[in-house]
Image 1 (cartoon, rainbow, N blue to C red):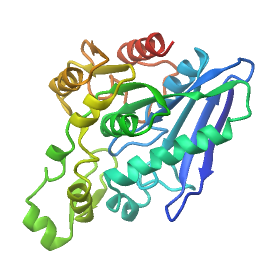
Image 2 (image 1 turned 180 degrees about the vertical axis):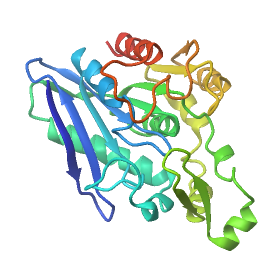
Image 3 (image 1 turned 30 degrees about the vertical axis):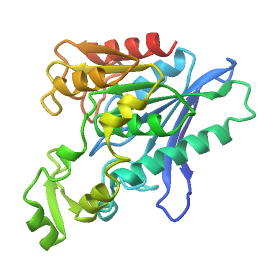
Image 4 (image 1 turned 45 degrees about the vertical axis):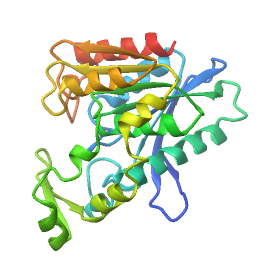
Length: 279
């Protein structure tokens, strides 16, 4: 297994994106699987490395990355040293970041016989699931889609804390990170960007437009995003399978940091479902 960590992608007028790749160079014609982390997430969170290796071992070139404004930096890609960037993140930045990562991946592996750049599959967790759905609808290069504990509606989440008038007046609101204890800023631009790009950011419309196969995975013990959201996505999608994982929470019963060499029973089930689906 050839693993490259923390590759730096510089792209137009944006903060850099940090990327990891997991690829078996002895195999031929492997599809590319690109993973999108969620809100307050990052590519090295918890057991994502073990998941990446497991899927790569099954014959795929696995790519994961940090969204440019997720709060990490090139020097410190884990956690949130750059809260200013975090506060300036928004959904359209993440959508455009994902487009840039797809571009980078197809260019980087174009002449590599081990990889088939015409087969791009997306996996998104939580908010990253919503981003992956939207990108699949707008980018014909994506041939399969997997969502893990995905949100089904961004509009319900843009003004969840405090009221809009106060947010606009203050210009910022803060969310406490339970693990790092940081006060994480959300600037009012987040809401303005959402309103300006409402049609592009409509997950329901995107689901109805997607023709490629889609696998929707959700835990029945998810207290962050209710399993009903997965059922909504399944109902809207024209070509989807729904898999509910028993006794699984929002992160499939792993946590950060994850020091074990194995993964939880629930995440192992997720990995197995993903491999069966993308095979």
